[in-house]
Image (tube, rainbow, N blue to C red; front, side, top):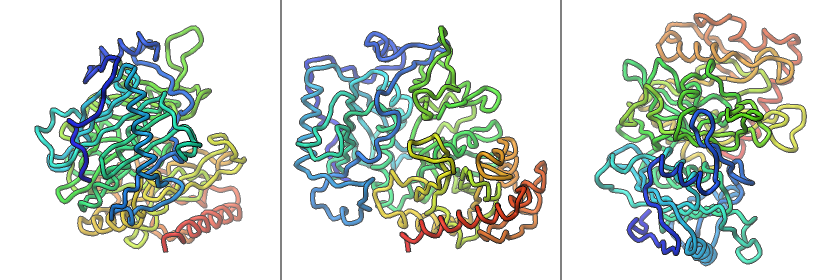
Length: 513
């Protein structure tokens, strides 16, 4: 959208404005201000306050009567807010910054010479400024831009008044597409900044015929690109970070006529249960100076992080620049994908570990964006797993109707003959609490077989409940693991769980008919 150029950012402060500080000065400022502390690895450990994840129901799009507003999928996740209320919050934000120090970073989002967006991010903490420096791209990559710049104000201490401002709470994430302006108040979660910009690009890019995607991407030795879609906890970051392939990016990408490109310059990895043996690349990237670790705890009387401790939240995070990954793709671009993986952590234990989707199934599973949540991960969950559907594996970030993105994906898949696979990274031999988690080594082996063409020469059979095409053999994988029903102690119990999940899929998809 056409908006205010970056040089018109309004920031008049009686405090000091720290502009484009590097990692060491930002760490120094964070320590001086008591924002966090250094741990034994040299990383900066911080607390994000009351929000340890995104405040998804406190997001608003500004309505100014523009034509594109008719294309918005208005919902509990995409609420309208009037220009009058937004302007009041904007002036409240400016007043907040007028008497305190501010940290400003000029960065870029989008690793494409024609489709990158300049971004200026103003925060009230040094550690958030460091996180954004880690996550967004350096402006030195591009001399100029054909896209208008975005400005993001993020202030943990700037709160809305729900009575006066009509907001749901004192937290607000407001996106004004007409002015290319984003306001974030009341949240210290750095992912809120990252995902607010990602949400904006989910409107900007499709209007230009570019598909924005919540996925990781990597490149093989022969130049073949692979995409990994999946919700939190499905293995998207883990499975795309491998020594055999070069990482384009771990979370946000776009697919244009010339191929795939990364939107970011860093990684925002979940760190719960992180260990050096299972994820050596991510472990090494996290445990360095310049990394920002959110909401983790150290061992008692120690400065060493206890990555198994989820006392504050299961959503512990670490931000670090992508060049920490030894085999990252410096230009952040790849060819049109040869393989696409939809990752689902099926806690019901009925989906096969790997299956190839037929053309008519691709849109179905992309619109479903399925995984399962377990008891204990959210308040109110019982003992049984809970199905979770997030359209396009990205529902909280989609301003437009999900079918628009699904149809764009299907068109590109068909045009470029990409193979699409459904991968269950969850349970086998029974549901959660009865069966067991599919070993990560097995999942890696099956994905490798798809990537290197092994499965192209294998015969496939169709299972009876979901109509999924399962390879009859994968080298290095026990045959019975490929067919979920054979591992269950009771076939009747398997069929009952499969029926429940199938009905949940069907009920969810009715909204898109």
